[in-house]
Length: 134
Image 1: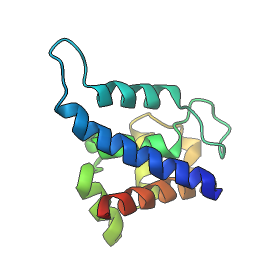
Image 2 (image 1 turned 90 degrees about the horizontal axis):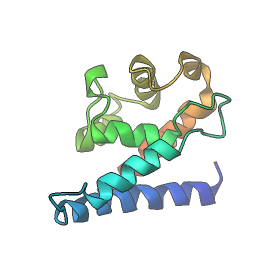
Image 3 (image 1 turned 60 degrees about the vertical axis):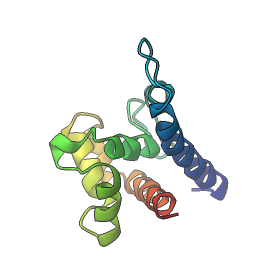
Image 4 (image 1 turned 90 degrees about the vertical axis):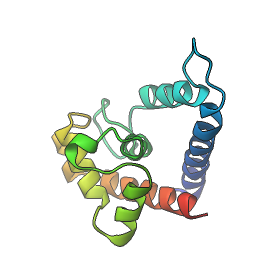
């Protein structure tokens, strides 16, 4: 992954996390919070990492953020700071996250063989950890 792509991913994760906190204080009763709408748009519009050939795959960034939000709890993946902590101590890794997404029908099973995709998920998990610890 090029440094500029990694930098862009880090900045995106940071801005989404920060905007979620700001938006929770700005919720209008008739509208979704600003961050929720932005996150849903980002997740729904981004579809493929350059390392895969399946056009219905989530980008690694989106997969990690779905897990961070708690969308893979039914598959045993923790959310928020627990996700980051378990990755940090080694009890949860990128392959675990990809397996959970396959089990949740969010990714095709062939993606489990894509080492480039799994490596990109690991980079995103590491980026999330670095941003969280600052």
